[in-house]
Amino acid sequence: MRSARRSSNTKWCSRACGRSSDSAAGAAGGGKTTRNSLYNQAMPQKFVRRPLCQAVTVAALVAWGAPSAPTLAAPQDKPAAPITPQQREVIRRSVDLVRTDVIVRNGDGQFESNLKKEDFDVFEDGVKQEVVSFSLTHGGRVFNVAAPPPTPVQEGILLPPQRPTNDAAGRIFIIFVDDLHLDFRNTGRIRELFKKISKELVHEGDMFAIQSTGPSSLAIDLTYDRKRLDEALNKISGAGLKPSDIIETPEGQQGPPEVRYRAHVAFSTAYDTLKNLEQVHDRRKAFIYVSNGYDFNPFPQAREVANAERMGMNCNPVPGGGAGNCTSPGNDGSGSSSSADVDPFTKQGNEFAEADLAAELAELTREANRANATLYTIDPRGLVGGPDLDEKIDPVEWQNYIRESQNSLRVIAEQTGGIAVVNQNDFDKALKRIDSETSDYYVLGYYSSNPDPMKRRRQIEIRIARKGNYSLNYRTSYTLKPLPRPPKS
Image (cartoon, rainbow, N blue to C red; front, side):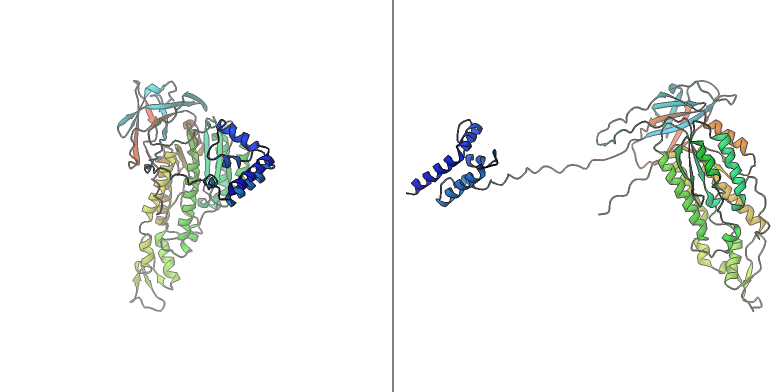
């Protein structure tokens, strides 16, 4: 009885569906009925009536307990994916092309412009390197004699996609205006200096950018428009601290806090600008650094006297020797104390001022060498004499301050292959020399054969294989970037 009812229901559904499902199943299985034929019928080929018929068929078979129920069961779970062995960690290491610019002059002091790539021997830490890129810039025009090849593919190294070629400007100038360390009284003198830079140094076809550190608010990206340079001249204004501002400011843990803050702003701004210059290749990048220089411990004796007076003491300053003896008001001098007892914690905190300044200057020069940028420092004060008449500064302390600030500019220039224009008034001669050094030069590039990332500082030596009397000017070392810190677990 059940078999008869089941047969009649099946026939009724087949007539209602018009046998379209049977023909589809036959076509899919080559005319043979498969075990999953009813499941295949549920796949909608005509989305009008077939789902209704199939639903009736399923309901009828389930109601009468058809033995073909396994056909309607939910598909079995997929077999578990095979366990693959844990992949090894891929070691990523960047392979950078080391570039350095070289100025070659013959015995007469003239630039030697007929050298080829084979005439240069480059050594890194005493090991000869293969020169893979070679370009000549002569008279401001660039001659790409040998473009750098693609980075050699090494196992385990993931390389980024190549970037488009940079602009073909022969000379690139970055004019850095450290107005936080320029005297307001010298604003007119500073603007005259920049007029000379615009006339003697930056010519048509040169690419330049301007960046300031203080209220002058100069931020001009690389451009060829010399009108932007002329417009920036009228905005430059000195905003440096006067000696009286430094002395009268209360001491911090590391000396005058405003002095260090301004220096950090200047160094960080220059550092970020140099990092952006790493994207410019095969060019000599001249970084014109205009500043009065830096001193983390200026006028120490005068500051000691000022600190003692703020504490209500009477001091007898010793010329060039500090505050001398300090006594409280009303004392006869028997309870006097030396200036070293005024604030020992402040004095100890500023004990390593010179070392801190040297560390920051060293990091700045390392980044400049990585970017293949040459820093030319200019002190717009020129030949410095004594302090202003309204500044009560001991002459010995003033000379120490001038020497320390100018030495900081010398370090920046000498460590990057540039020159320091300090303690002189002939800016025209210095600008012509900078113009000459940035107009004629070679740029050599090589892939370092030393894969050790722990060897950060590398020494460079360049020789001329051709016979003759040549003098070479190039940077003698560079430092790798510090390794990234491992992620916190």
